[in-house]
Image 1 (spheres, rainbow, N blue to C red):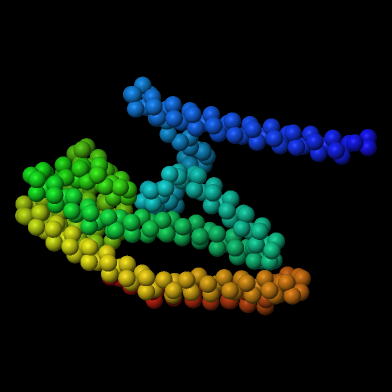
Image 2: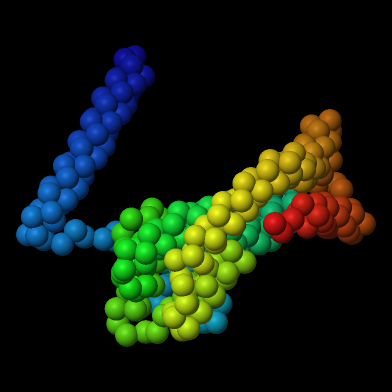
Length: 312
């Protein structure tokens, strides 16, 4: 019995070593399986399987709601490989984790505010991904217009030029124009397909390109010269946007740093006297003060972002 602690430690170490070996073997096998699937898919023996979807029941139920349809439309625009059910489960899990972590570190009342902030953050994350994808698409517009101009100058039809651009360009431009080419292949009109593209990625630059393509296709004008001029204009706008983003980077960092300083002050206050935040949020006046202060921090963040949003 005297060697029982040593025996326990030894058995634990052996179990950990076996667990590490098992995990390593499992992932090595999955990698070999993936390589085998790719090799067989290239030879045409099998189709490469897609990712297994989780939470299918939640996904089916949530898609029927109005909110689920909005989330589905946003997820389709972001390009994320997520279903509506997976997104909802992940957001709810993040909200619960935020509630317990913030409630433990600060006070239970702050956990409730963090949960509300997490719900807002889920929607803000989708909006950020849409804006990021739109910015990436705008950055590819000069190259896109150059490919379209070269293809049409070579005598190819506009539909063929769009399919060629989808094959040659990287994502997100390649993926988005692949959707346009697929819609044209099933008989949809060019105007409707490009209008859907402009709705998915709203930007003034893309609207100009869509208008140019639609008018040239409808009126039969000189699309090559129009695309050449548009390419030069987009190159200049791209450089201007980069300069503006560089000039405003410090202000955007300030918008994030100010709310973080507020949370830092709360940690300092709680560290000076244990339970200070519990006492503060235990009274109605303290709760009102916390809500007002949080609202002012949020308002400051919103106003700084508004002031730095310069349309070029």
